[in-house]
Amino acid sequence: MGYKEVYKAAQDNPEQFWLEQAKAIDWVRAPEQALFDKGGDLYEWYADAQVNGCYNAVDRHVENGRADQAAIIYDSPITNTKQTITFAELQTRVAALAGALVAQGVTKGDRVIIYMPMVPEAIEAMLACARIGAVHSVVFGGFAANELAVRIDDCTPKAIIAASCGLEPNRVVHYKPLLDGAIELATHKPDACIILQREQEICELIEGRDIEWEAAKALGTPADCVPVEGNHPAYILYTSGTTGAPKGVVRHTAGHLVAINWTMKNIYDVDPGDVFWAASDVGWVVGHSYIAYGPLIHGNTTVVFEGKPVGTPDAGTFWRVIAEHNVRSFFTAPTAIRAVKREDPKGLEVKKYDLSGLRALYLAGERADPDTIIWAQDVLGKPVYDHWWQTETGFTIAGNPAGLEALPVKIGSPTVPMPGYDVQILDEAGHPMPAGELGAIAVKLPLPPGTLPTLWNAEDRFRKSYLTTFPGFYETGDAGMIDEDGYLYIMARTDDVINVAGHRLSTGAMEEVLAGHPDVAECAVIGVSDPLKGQAPMGFVCLTNGVNRPHDEITAECVKRIRDQIGPVAAFKLALVVDRLPKTRSGKILRATMVKIADSEEFKLPATIDDPTILDEIKAALQTIGFAKRVTPKPL
Ligand code: COA
Ligand code: AMP
Image: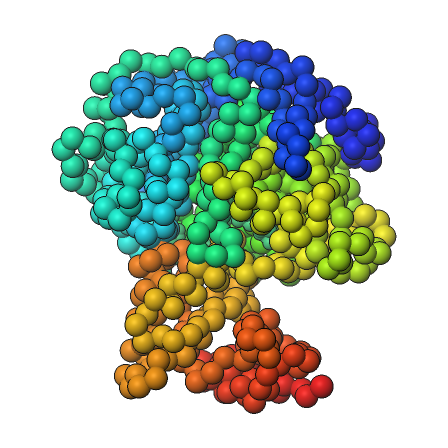
């Protein structure tokens, strides 16, 4: 069967299609029904089944002849370490860590926060939770203590698993003080913290709460896999929304296993035994689906890479890892390729390595700009596949099903909807738009298995965020179009989410932090174009009457505030003091117009603008920092 037949089969009879795909998973009790309609536009998959995620990712491979195959290859140019962990070794390590959690009183359904850098122990921590039915919530290391505290209070973990430090090329990230600070800030307190002491920084442990990794294992006995219901949450992953409060995306166990297992062959075209590498971070959804679970469930070797595309030590690192570990399919964010291209525009580093084993490069996480795709195709001589998805969906909404049938690539399009996704372009009133016309991208309910059933403890917010604007549809928050051939194009976000170096950030959250500055009366944060990171956040602040301090002092404090309260990952470095913000007559800040001015793009003066002269002031302020070079606002 080709793509069209498979897609149609999933549309015509989802029940049969997804029960068929479920056969690739080892069940404690196999599902008899795929889709469960809970009413009110809520759905669950395989709720009648019993299964264990860790068993499918680890134990079954040990039992089925892959005991000595590498499960994880850890490659850390930052610490000059390489390590291979076989499936048999992984089973022993994970069972022991699961036992450590049990010894701390963690049982099925309890939450465990994982705050770790890119080391194999991070994957082991996720799998240890899955083994005993605990629900993990991984928090990206680039977030500040405050963000960690918000997540601790939202998911109320019984335990936290963390490392003493993370390593960025230019500094040691002191995780432990961040963790201690977060626990101090949070209202909820975990009972225990299991701490991996890295040799680069040994941290102090708080007696009665913190336990060193191996010591924690010694307190327990290796734990067996605990069967969980198909609709048992495997994990919660927080992602940015419009406001400062992150959304806790819930992933149910069975749908997640079935869906991502399906993608490994059909999208990424790897067979069990092949090496698969996603150069991302365990803190993001890409890390969950394609560093941890996907490859392991499918019997692939996964690469855990602790490094950067450039500077660790050079722009050839990616190609070295691919050649050395014989990576067959490679996945990263366009920004990483842009970083490599900037350092090595002629692709000379590529020529130093034997990349004959590499089949294709997959890009996601942000818009893949044509220059980057073409450059990568040229220097690698391999197909480059853009694919579009979100934390919420856990796997590709639109992509090129290369393992099923490689469709012709149209640069600028992530290709076509994957089985189970009925993607439609809607106008503001929810009517379908004709081919080629721009609108909101929505997916007709139900979503396929593996996608979010709800938000953690926030069903109302789930409905409001995703199900209300277009009744009967899931609102993706992206805008775009579908062409005559059914290819999808992703053009922009419809909300206040921006994408900085493939990291999803909320401008609303940054505005909340800036508004907390004692001298700031009003503010706006927008995402301006950045040649490396795609977008960069930029803040505009209006000062409280009577504040007379130097502006650069205030903007430096704003930058520090965001770094301290959200984290370095926000990459907030641009802030300007302005007298007034442009608004509509009803008082809405014209952020989209500000973006156009900053990016020197043509724009139409909004008909509802209150005072157009403010745009000139914004432009003048932007020009002082090298933005808004060309365009003069045009009167209507
Ligand atoms: N822990 C702590 N700090 C982190 C971190 C982590 N895990 N990851 C990033 N940071 C810090 C960085 O050190 C940097 O701090 P600085 O302001 O002190 O320099 C800041 O957060 C911004 O990081 P980043 O946006 O990654 O920028 P960069 O300049 O360090 O690197 C790239 C630029 C393009 C090389 C880098 O963004 C990259 O590799 N991107 C790939 C993105 C990706 O994999 N996304 C996942 C979705 S698929
Ligand atoms: P995240 O949930 O962090 O993975 O971010 C998801 C968002 O990133 C999407 O809603 C898009 O806005 C953007 N995104 C992800 N992949 C792509 C892509 N291939 N093309 C364009 N935008 C993308």
